[in-house]
Length: 269
Ligand code: G3P
Ligand code: CA
Image (tube, rainbow, N blue to C red; front, side, top):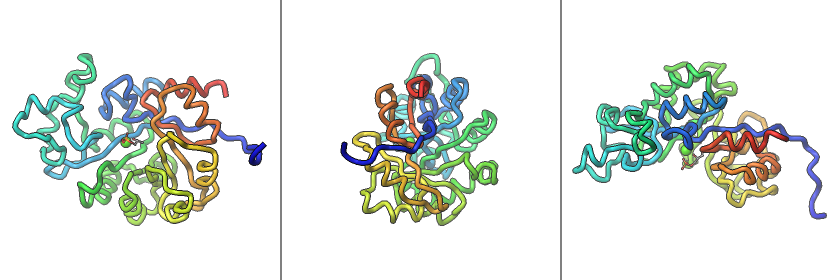
């Protein structure tokens, strides 16, 4: 054989409902987190951006075009950037009809509304700061909102909240502001770069494409800022075979639009 046999028994990975149960309900809406809850999923992922008037909202794309009726409502305001619309304008958009007529009238939630709903559902949050370069200061503002809604209390910080971003400076900033909060870096730094990341992030969260045992083991061999082994949550995994492969690599989390598929795939392990 080639390399040492794996002898460590791994727990089942945490399954995270990506943008909520976004295969079943419109992504990043309260309906999507409620659907995840109804299906039995505790962990949900979302994307946080900022309106023209400084309110934090939960939406994935930098523009409102794909997931709302903004083009019909505001035909003269292309390219419909989130940052160019007020919270009141955004609150009036339909964020469900694009997905299915059954969800017409679903709204883009504010971060506050979203936090209140998942608190009610007793869910846990993998919060992504999306495109933070567009929103200077969003790290501090997001932490303030989280604190106001009780999400920086010890019981949340200890195991119920992770803040992640594709922007390393943004993750570093979150860690600097609140060193107690668990963080994740979205991407695949080289193995040589990992020790630098381990100074400010608890997780390395890569795309599953090309992920191999050497990389997972390299991540696990380092300790993060809380003196625990770095974790790895991978995305976006919606099929059985990939789920089984990744669980075999010992990943700590699998982020899925269709988390029931992942759960069913891993059920026999
Ligand atoms: O949580 C991982 C995943 O959400 C990162 O990519 O584009 O879906 O936000 P994206
Ligand atoms: Ca995301």
